[in-house]
Length: 565
Ligand SMILES: Cc1ncc(C[n+]2csc(CCOP(=O)(O)OP(=O)(O)O)c2C)c(N)n1
Image 1 (tube, rainbow, N blue to C red):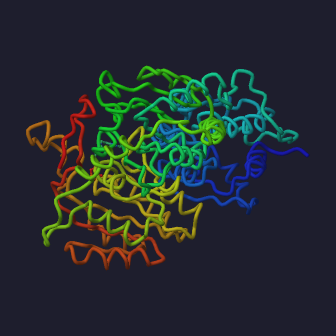
Image 2: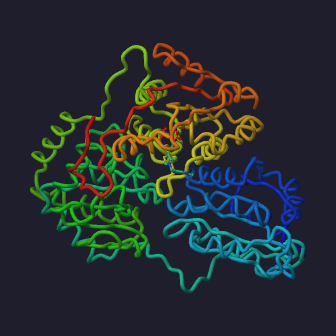
Image 3: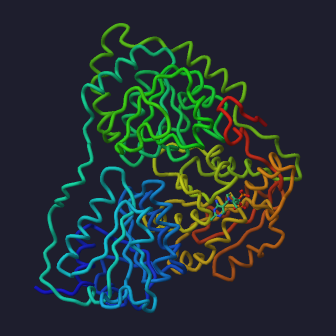
């Protein structure tokens, strides 16, 4: 049967198992919107700004492991998604973005709402397409989903001119993709694997350094098994939180700029660093020349270009993290029956425990009149027992959410790691809540960041999504203020948010519920009430204005040059 491009799109989404689309309409996509109501198996969520749509699709993908889908119109609709596309790209999140385009005959004519979105997003998509012929559409959609979810996942954009959406052709959805130049390596090379195993067996002070790749490849169970059976401690990146149980005695906490003392010391002292699905970015390494100075480095990553990009590696393994750790697990399981298969790591583990006890994550406690932001996160952890999906904005709120909440399961922390996008957390929480209506989803926010996509309150309320926004309101763009305090002689230029809306009234104006907390004794009961309320809620918590995030490795310093509380 012949279908239009718009019908082909919807049919293909159905074939891909898509149940939710986050989008915003316009002239160039009106034919597609005309089809959506005919597909009750797909729910379209109308956001209030296209940046909200892409972050919601991204949050949906992070929380589920499935591909998130976003649909916007041409021109400003498309450009409004660019930050979110770059955000997904930096964190390797699978999303497919459909953008409308002006009719083919007008492309390049300076037409109304025309923009070269394929050109604009070339550096921040894994791949992108301009569909010129309706005959290509089904194949392109198949490829887009395949590319987004395989290898190193990432965003793929499909630009659809209006005439292509209207044109008709015979519909047949391809069963598989034939992409000659794209063949991600999944299985590890046996020789490299056995070299890595030799290093593991010889190491006295080994350390796992796990990144977001462990989560995206579903390798957490293997990582946990290996760490437990080999007695190797684990540190993770921000993106890797949840890849290993946050309450496990072998877990050292996050490493890097705001990492724990024990994790950073461990990196500097270890004799073997096994990096899994991590990319050695500068927030993790500090000064690269003095990063892990005593360690042999094994690097497991599906993306060959990320290996040796920032640090030198002794044993590179280009493969899927889960496949590699599975293979390693098999070898280790056979070996463990032999006496002395690996060295005894007890002295190393004792040393790490001592470091952890000497400098735990801490803060100068509340004095009875002022609420500490860390205390808010701790209380949330306590009240939820850790059973929540947490998203964050960017800044101090993000670091405290990383440090003081423990993530026991993968996909329970949704945070903008690579791009550091203020305004990400709330729409991402919406995406996660759409995917998991029964779960508690909390956005830990700053008073600055939350104002960047606050309009999505309408989306949350309209679809009955009971997302909780907990604002750590310090009256500042806190993280920048912290840098100004520490490194720019307290010149607080443009970081004081001396005007903020009344967040309680704002919540109410949108039909959500609002609470304000100003005294420590209110913290627990009000947070509890807010969590239990089955509605969209904002809690505006007034916290110590000039609290800093510690430990802190100053930019460009080495990981053992930490500022402590
Ligand atoms: C879109 C965007 N603009 C600017 C920045 C730079 N930046 C990083 S943290 C930060 C302050 C965030 O303030 P707030 O949301 O109030 O959180 P806090 O640090 O106080 O917890 C800024 C401005 C950013 N990360 N993203």
